[in-house]
Image (cartoon, rainbow, N blue to C red; front, top):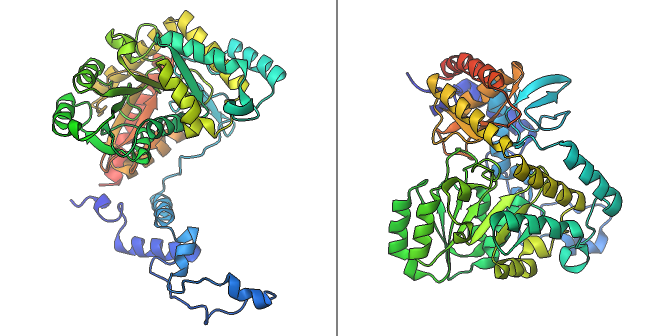
Length: 467
């Protein structure tokens, strides 16, 4: 039997023609438009003698190069939307939630189970977090007002950085207004054309983009394959000056854990810096939620660059780098995402500091999350579901292969008041589309069974529909 996905995501020839005709109705044609010269174009009314100055000097450039609607990336989005509409799949993105992002949510006036939230420890909306944010807002407003380098420094920034550094047992930390920008700015500040980044093949986009923008050479090694990484280092390390090995602590798409002890050994042997992105491992790994270093029982100072985000466990927004004092000082004066950006909003900084305090004093939140995650993984596997590399910590994908199947399943579960998002190409490689379940300490085993039972019922229907 021919897989429909082999024929433009499952559409027959008539359906493809109809879709492309409809695309042409509201966008530039998929074929190249005709070209005109300045001599052919009518003179705009009222421009008079200045018209010649406004005309394009290069007449051979097609007009569609000046249109956003003609960009190939935009056309691809339009095609994907029309495909989804054709096969009856709702678009699951940008759905408005009407409540706090927790284990349950409210959408269009109805209550949903929510497996699309970063609220790992249930701290979003915690009374103490809200109280400190409100108090700070009254005292300092909602904005830092300027870049911290010039006039935006506030007490809340230093308090948060001190708390983060203390938790990691390192000298200092610095917070940025964006987690993505934290990785991009850090790598592009520390490295140049003579240097190199070695990153896990499944590393987050921000790590890869930071490596690209740094101008350094970039090497990708197979996921969690430290033997392959060592072969790369042995073959290429001496070609470069400074080298950073960059990876995630808990992988955001797969729920697998970096092999930290092996990475530390490699970075020491080959004179590299080691950068660990703890966006999803802070609060979820280790007995107290300290992250991947606590999970493996290693000295956190053996890692040169700790990166994390404030939007997951610490329930506000932004990112941070923790490490030696020289690293932090350099980033504060040279990292573009810090120097040329407004300082973090004081209420958000205060909220993250309080969330960190609660996490440290209530380790039972992490214990509960870990128990629920292990329960989810066991139940999913017992139903024959493909959980990929997941190790049972906060993030568990259910891999279904086809992007259409993933989209259909998300829509079907949404109709059953279960909110879980599909992850499709190009975010993951072709054939590895999935539903990604984020777990929270606020979920219950009953919530998990409800979701998995519904998924098990809907999956055969989705597969049959698109075979």
